[in-house]
Image 1 (cartoon, rainbow, N blue to C red):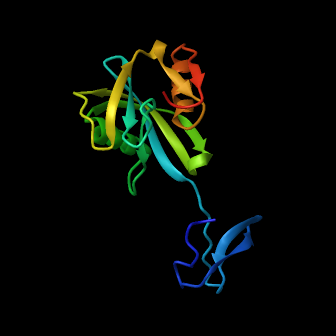
Image 2 (cartoon, rainbow, N blue to C red):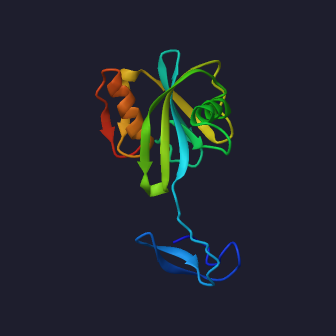
Length: 170
């Protein structure tokens, strides 16, 4: 159920109604609004910089969490354009290649992650979202059991590595 209680079209209250076999928030006045609460598209990058993988720490995360570069896909851009933009915005790097790794559900955050391997060049310059980064040899990378960690695991496996799996990013 969404955090809002009223229909964004007509202002009537939202009530639980059966729609497509599920109970969904729907307009009680019958204007036709149904909140489907579909997952949001997110792009993520296994960034390879000078042969090393870049893991970054968001300023809102615990000090031990380092993960992939990720962000929401914006209106009008392709997933490949979005991942290139995120790498440029968050790390200041230019993507010289972007190859799809896979698509992953991230149910806890109601997202679908479209993950790429991105070869990047330039000097790492963190934006205001990030406070630190690490560059890790692929053979030493560890992956985590949800979200972008699954993409990192799959990319490492495609390179012949079997990463140690952790519960949380690290």
